[in-house]
Image (cartoon, rainbow, N blue to C red; front, side, top):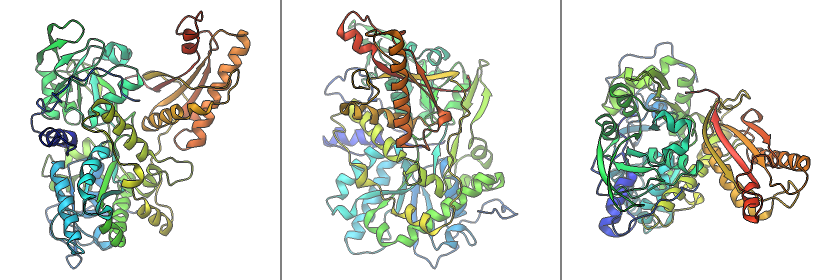
Length: 589
């Protein structure tokens, strides 16, 4: 995807200048090397864990409003293929005659805005207008859209400001237009993919603390590899970082062989270290592949398919006072999403509109990289590039846990990545708002009640095959009653944490491996480890059958045959009593 900015970059500037929690901008093009906290040197730690018309239409040139008799509704967004449904529904820079937005009475105006600090100011200006008595302010933004895994910090910053006007003036998420499904990724040497522990001591270039940094942080947590949050130092036992000014700079740092001197936290000496990995997004990954090559996708939003939902945000007071407009906007977007899912001509039309609205690239670019593209890089490696998806009503029902058998995946990604940033930078983000304060699913619920069907949800499909490519391997301390497969009450927190992690990694196969210590007969231990593995599987499916179908989960029992430590001590036996979760895919890459 092109030119999304990182909210945390702007957030950190404000935090340093004002000494408090500030705003942050997704994919900021300002220099980020000065943004790391300087007051203290953080230490490395493991991150916590519809029918298409026969004629799709001519090239898009007309951007005039088609339903100007309706009040103008302004929507600020960055360039992102996940918004293809929004583009198609609007028909141009402003809702066009005969388009879905005008059909549902919404005079929507699309405005590209890459600076999330500015997005927050636009929301604040709009809220202040509401507070001043204007029912539909002419200044500011009715909506903005960001990535869901950054919503915690974005909403913490803006709502700390808006709540002073009153709780009804705070910002809330009302729906989702689509997902990143592959284009945001962590790229590294093939050896890191084959054995994640070989990433220890690696040096990665990227826009620090943004969505792609989040991908790497989750992968580190799942593989129990420490992260070094201080980019001025080098930890040979952790993954280390070089700040990039934007996603193109990140890829260029790798392509150019960028090196820097960093202080080794173990020895105290300065060492020359060169970039050997990248976190980036399309077309940054294309630059890496075509200009130098040698890196593969370690993990991306293809595997972590629930991590980056598009999050549509508005001011609570206005959205609740204008329910028909909000539902009209969502309905048009969802129906256009269905068109794109069913017909490539709809995607081509949306891509042509996107090129006009974003004023960047051409239709061919947006169309090509909408889906994951596999191509050979400069060194002959096969690499995956691009990948997004659009959402319909059924996808929103799944995302927000409103469909039978689903769970609130938005809540999971919001909470998990808020905790990641909080754990790595506690002074900059000591807290965040609970999901109940920032999410209003009533509009999606009402649409579901009013409409029959709503399309088919895009659920991950599994065939029951074994893992061929491991993504991560992590042991969980799931506590059971002695000699039993019944969970102890104190283990519920660990189960919930594991559940959220596995929901986010919804594109992966899950293998549950049960292990015991060597106390007791070996045949009984074998049966016990099997019973406990099946207990974990059953519990996951009770929480969300849609996210954990039988074909996704495999169960393996090892008894006491694979100890991690000596069974001669109580500490060793405790380590050996474990449930290991292996995530992976059914194809090698």
